[in-house]
Image (cartoon, rainbow over all chains, first blue to last red; front, side, top):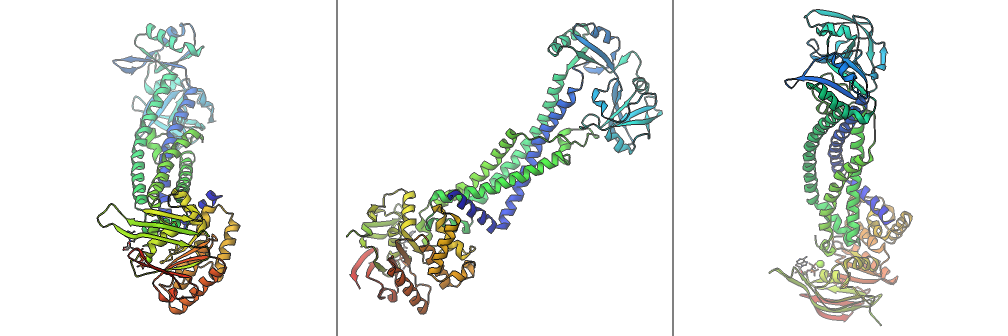
Length: 384
Length: 230
Ligand SMILES: Nc1ncnc2c1ncn2[C@@H]1O[C@H](COP(=O)(O)OP(=O)(O)OP(=O)(O)O)[C@@H](O)[C@H]1O
Ligand SMILES: [Mg+2]
């Protein structure tokens, strides 16, 4: 009962100072929003990467020469297929294309190289020479759609015309956004890639526990190869996103610190009115604990509201509006990076951490200075 | 008969460690019976307010004993001192000390928050106290909009809202003209009639000479200067 009454009083006194309360609320909300956006986005991108790679091959075999990625001979597929435990080996043809018209990089894949998530197709997969399917990002920057023609410059610097038979509409567009798919033979011709070479080999392994063993055998049989397992790929993704998220977080942590110092400053410099009010409350019979409770409720009300607003804002930004500002920083270089709409999730642990790191310091910075004012004897208030 | 309040050789020194230490109360012994009306009179700076804070448990004496209703309070920890003060005493400060942005009713309710009462009970008690000082029509007004005399009545209502045994008033006529002073003294007389103990600090001869006052205690330089029944 006492708590409820004092909480009521705390809310009333916040409303008595609407300007000050609103100012703190706005700054605080924005800070939480930014912080939460980074957290949510980092987590979402990692999750996306996991989902994405789940459809990819368990093992990819590349060839390296002088430390660089090289084309791999198609016949190497037979060597790999002979390793016990290997299911299937598919030579994949894919590469990058810089479109000077839109100043964007596309990823070009032969249909065999494209993974199973390509089922999510509006239209159909390309079947004949001169046909292609494109990701939503490509469609947007080139302003083309289903059944339109698309002209690309091939390896001989000659314009090639493709009819668009399909546009990807993947749920998450992390991978398909900048994608352009065509029959493998067409892509070879487009790239000028000889028939005995492929970009890499996609290897399926029957028993997931044997992936490392298979990778080691591949390395032994083909010394110039570099087998990459899905797990390793995931780790790299995670590391990259973590690193970027960490950078941003470090940045915002310093902003947070600045905010706390500001809050501390504001609070330690209790306004004369607030100090007087504390004195009066003590004089009319409030205990020091009552005054502290009042200040704690005040701080808690402000910071909790700001936290909820800020988190909701971040949630909306990340999951509905695709994180327009921060997203770019986290995702990296790709111009055609998908306008990301990750699946909304709620991670209680994450929320609790963020809440703890923001609410506790704020409440402390409200209560501690009030405490200093509240422990003085109330007779002080009688002479002012 | 045991007195309601008993003070034995109380001293109060402000910032005793510093060179400008002031002994505002320099060894005073005083007994106040329940239902009595006592006036503390004396020139400015004689220690009236300081003595009031000791009587009303607003501060602890530097040395000496203060006993309220048989319980020695001068050594009580702060929490319990606060409790005794809230339950036993009502204060009307010289400067009233109201919160100007709050309404009359909210100001009067301030002492009730720590009492863990229901909202209805709080409103009921505040209404009763406001009724006692005839402020019911102004209950919703903000204190900042009231005249000085009205503000004092708010302060009295706030002092009464916890139904104290003792009403303490510091210079209650300092900001009032003679008509309002008489009105105030009548009000205090009525409260005394109802059984309240009164302790009033003043240098206003009108108050000291008023028939409601049973006893006048004269102070000079923090000491008693004669304790005579009027
Ligand atoms: N908080 C304080 N710190 C230092 N000195 C104080 C403090 N409070 C009172 N004093 C000093 O103690 C002495 C007594 O003060 P007190 O306020 O009790 O007198 P008073 O009789 O109430 O005077 P007045 O009639 O002017 O209100 C004064 O000399 C005053 O300066
Ligand atoms: Mg005084």
